[in-house]
Length: 221
Length: 337
Picture 1 (cartoon, each protein chain N blue to C red):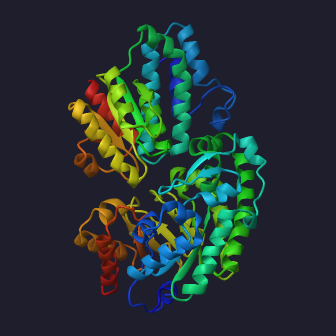
Picture 2 (picture 1 turned 90 degrees about the horizontal axis):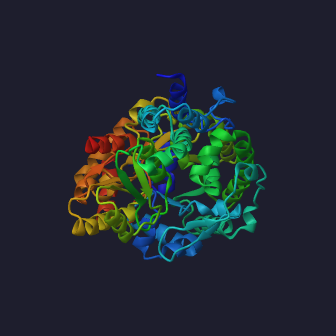
């Protein structure tokens, strides 16, 4: 792999956002994902190829997160680096010269204001080549439904941190199923389990973002 | 034996009729006692009434001041709203950046109504059930408090990008919390719980960098005053459990996400015990009495008999009283093992 793309993968893996970022300490003063993505485009690498190497970096991050080798702060730094690189690829996605794998609509369910888990999953999935529509926190069922109407092929992801708001996850899934019985819905969050996923008729539960991406990739293949 | 006597005897390795029963009940206690959650958080009499009623009805061995993490944060200037019957929500007043964190000023617990309420709750318990139940005060640990006043994502970035300013802010947090602990012990708390939940999300390196020494400082302060310390970090703490034990806290909380206590039981000093660790949702809320009994017995054995019985974290508000009775019976049965 070319040097510039190699470096870009490393920036994602280790969370190097830009040259000014002091993290990680052993890459201080070096170009980050922001500069390298721009350089790669300027040197003529196709956006799809650049996206591939970004995904390679995020896959390494997801693997290390699942294996408890890195934790939430490092994961967020990698996601931030990914976001910086993706900014440069946006025009290519918008013009259609580069393609996303699919779209993913995500939100924390109604009544729940916690966003860190949802944010990590959203950034990780975006970093793996999907368009992510982040509806934020305290998302009403109607908001999910409106987004599904706009994007019939999307996958929906719901997050809840509280046992009290898990109930709203059940209600939201039921309302979506009434109108869109075949809609693919993933759920996650601290109190959520595989059993709860089955009980509320959602399609997929993952305890970590890596699992969600594996599921999405299977659907997309 | 009273709950207070049972808890102390268990910690001292003296004979007990059964292990102590210390479930964390907050929203569940409020609902069971018919107290709106806003009142549970803001009215010391309402909280004490609910907690003491639960302690009586379910043979708990402790009463606590726990309800939400926002007392200290409000003293640091975070604006908090209290919905009528739901969890409080932080709505503003967070530190805008890590540089501002470095300028954080210590708070005076006596000048903040939430902190004063906590002292009133301990005073209330001491006068009404002191010596009957084990009275636990509470403070936020350094990492949890920094997250509360800065926001979880922002704090996560700060830990890596601006560790010096984070450290300065945490030193101010510790200075304030030490005062708060002293006041709670003066009101008659038997123990102080240190809640530092976000530590389970940062891994062992950042835990050692930011939390370990500061938590140890709190534990040493509590011990110097002749009281007991409990360290509560929910989530999967496997990677930091040896360090949590090394803080010297007397009671180390273990969440259900930790696969087993057996790997760590040998690290406990003679004065230390675990507290945990049934899954509050799949076992205590949704499980049948048999599953609850089996889980409690399995965990107790895994701890080598050094475990106060509780769920891994808070009992959920939707847990039926019947399941709490099953939980209580499981504790009694464990005493007969």
